[in-house]
Amino acid sequence: MTARRAALALTFAFAAGCGSPPPVVTPTPPRDLIVLAPHPEGAPLGAAVVTASGTAVDLTAAGAAVTVAAGQTPPAPVILPPDEIARIFGEALGALPPPARRFVLYFELGNDTLTAESQAQVPAILALVAERGQPDVAITGHTDTTGAAAANVVLGLRRATLVRDRLVAAGLDAGLIEVASHGESNPLEPTPDNTEQARNRRVEVTVR
Amino acid sequence: MPIMRRAVGLCVLALLLGAPPAPAQAPPAAAGRVKVATGSASIVRAGQTLAAAPGVEVFEADVLRTGADGRLSVMLKDESRLALGPMSELALTRFAYAPGDQQLGLGVRLARGVLSYVSGLIAKLAPESVRLQTPTSIIGVRGTHVLVKAEAP
Image (tube, rainbow over all chains, first blue to last red; front, side, top):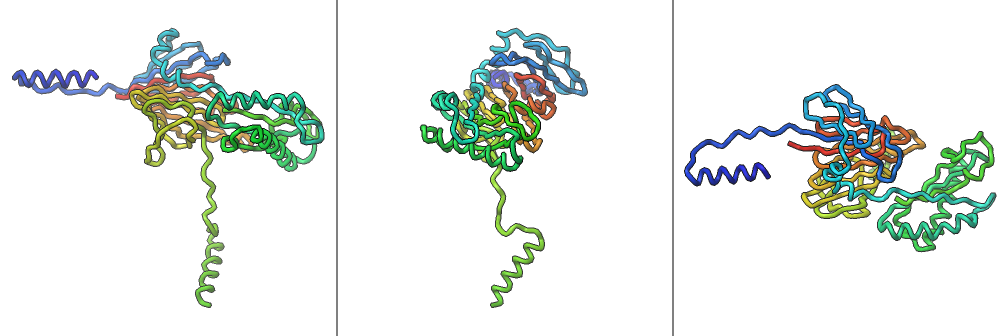
């Protein structure tokens, strides 16, 4: 914008008969601003470490910000107030999608029937999918540690597929769905091998 | 049947060389999907520019780009979120999300513009494997929401 205005000014200057040579334009070196911002849904803040020119700067407070110029040691961080964050980053923040949501469905012991509570969650899943428009839906089966690990991968996949079929029958677009099994490798409640644990026999439905 | 014999010979040769009998390469899995795309927003993949729209898949090595009126966001499979404001360009340099195989990694490079990054499961499971890059800096993420503005010269 500034460059264009300068060029325009020069054009006028030449048109007016001023014969001075155009100024040498030196490009500004890159400058980056990095901010540790509050989490949009209120999860813990954590920290970020910015490394430039061999120097590391820790950002640990909400709004902690550092501006780094190419080839220079980064300065100490400052706190960027919320209205400044909104002014600089508002458009990107406005484009953030809502977070993924997870539903955990359980089966009756020893068969492939969803528990009544889990069955009752199906409408909420469909409503969320409709609200999100184009989500992907990940359906992942999990088992407890009863039986062999390989057999549990198969069991987890069978249950995940049952949930998939149930959601498709209820109207979910099959093209959005991805089915997987973690078998007994990702328990909610860690247990020794060959332990029955109802909370680990589950299918997780994640709407992204 | 010399032709037949030659074909058999070729197959044997192929087997000896360890070449697969047919192209069996599975297509790479998507890293995520576009969630919001307004104004001028595109994905550059292997030199081709594709229009970004909600639901379009994003892959490792893709470059996301917005124009003066553009905004673009993506949710990756590990539930990380990346949102770009106008006049931005971001490369998804690395995406690995296979917790069962200990394969975890996320790399993004913001060449210019404005980024909001909200961390997902990769950052939770293996924070040291998440790396954001700008023209001047490398950002290690131990946190959950990082904003970056890269002012290109």
